Image 1 (tube, helix red, strand yellow):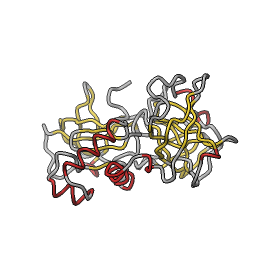
Image 2 (cartoon, rainbow, N blue to C red; image 1 turned 180 degrees about the vertical axis):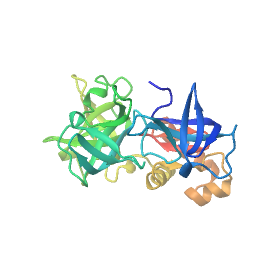
Image 3 (cartoon, helix red, strand yellow; image 1 turned 90 degrees about the vertical axis):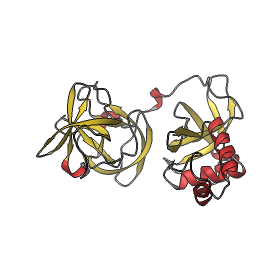
Image 4 (tube, rainbow, N blue to C red; image 1 turned 90 degrees about the horizontal axis):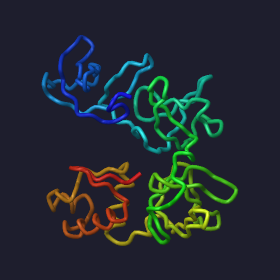
Length: 277
């Protein structure tokens, strides 16, 4: 597999062509088409791009931001169908294919489905895989009863809803513990209610999801959920900017952010706060 495929990369511009600029990816050259090339970019400079393969199996770069990268679980809407599979909108011009063999159930245009972004082992094209149970760990060794976790609702059953917990485990939220309607692909905050002898995880949910996180931490969590899970205003920002964004003092914000980080609900990157998937 080509290193960097399906991920973001900071790559150096090595030469121009009539079709765009070529970027250096290890010992390969990857085209960034003209429509994505900044006007002021020069040879020797670096640019952050996402790398994938086009329909002719050529490596290509884009500055567009996909809704998920390789290995992520994500809810995406089906927008087109073909004899060999379904196409989901994941934020790029080239839609994400879910091959027929990777569907858990028949897909319908206009509905959302939870898939994992994977590589087709033959073509190394990025695909969506809806049969995700086999990717999730069977033994919950990183969680314990009472933990607050982030979940992604991915399947309705007779008993309730299956939930991906912290992108690692399967949990079940029983119908009698659901206070408000849930949708496939919905992100929720829930509790580990019970870990059974067979390692199956039972969940419970408080109304509104975020009520399990109190006060200022809840305010920050709500902001992230309302802004596609990302904030560029971190604890390094000016106090006035923090107050303008979150309605909190810098001290209160840092404390709230620490609470969310300890509960593994956010990822702290340089210059960016990201809601855990």
